[in-house]
Length: 186
Image 1: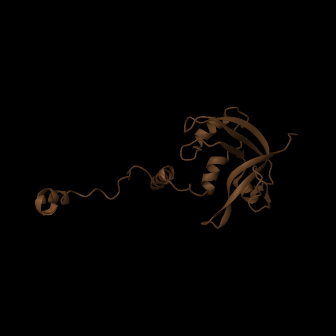
Image 2: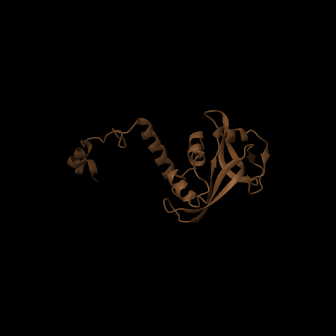
Image 3: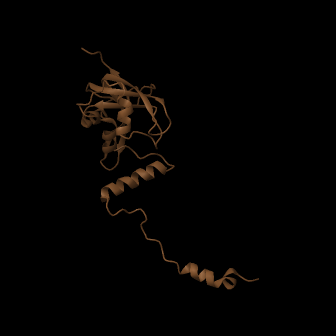
């Protein structure tokens, strides 16, 4: 019995002599190194099969906190805000989301307060001590970005948040706004 090596030696030799591919295929010369890293992180998060990355200050601020001058009473605020801030879970629409007008530090202080009941009744949330303006976005239609549509509800009250430990800064950071404990307008 003859082996492939003895019967097809020329094609095998030509296969071995092929030039090697470049070591980095996804490198762009005109992009900054930081943007390249950000792109790679986003790509790996979108197409990975494991859990999403833990929250960081930067990601929480970019998805949740809005500027004080933005008009939160607009009925279409959520449709626009979710698109502009790129809020999704692996390109799928989120069932609900909150935007708040507050400082990150105020929400981070809430992580060191006592536990209070979350919306589902489990005592794993924290209540902020600062009254905040917010918008609650409730999912209405669509399945993937950019087709997601939401109903916007203006709220004013105390944010109820969940927190998670962040290893690199060794501190609790806000992870998710679970609810807003509304206070009546004066």
